[in-house]
Length: 164
Image 1 (tube, rainbow, N blue to C red):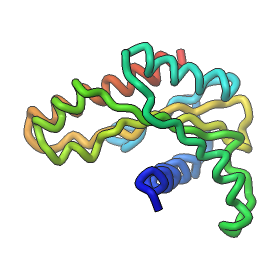
Image 2: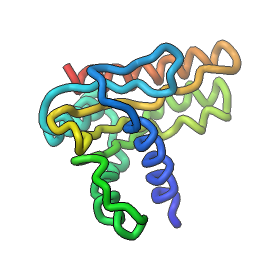
Image 3: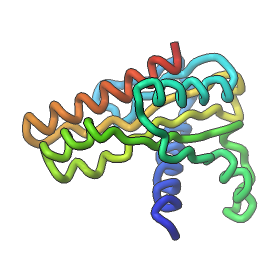
């Protein structure tokens, strides 16, 4: 199993947890480990808005994962063909500037790189597209917390641009 496959499986688990409850207009609980914003629109448009929001910041999308397709393709083999998403993707990217700052502050912050923004449309709620990210846990020394807060600000700006 490749590292990308392991990463996709871990991200899929996060998606499944996020999809467990009813879709909300916006979900950003204080202290929650994810920020998810729901917008009305087509999945294809919103996914492209996310890609544009990343590229507009001079960042390169390293990998675009097609989790929805994988679930559809492997459902029967995994013991369930129940549709979860109409479509689901994630965008993996990094920033040399943000990553260097976070890792200089605390080498363990490598755990937050690369950055991921996900997009999904639930099978049960067509027309509502969810965009979000996992919040970096802000612990450790003040310098580390500050650097990770800047990463979250970047991720939040990408989500806002894609959903406004």
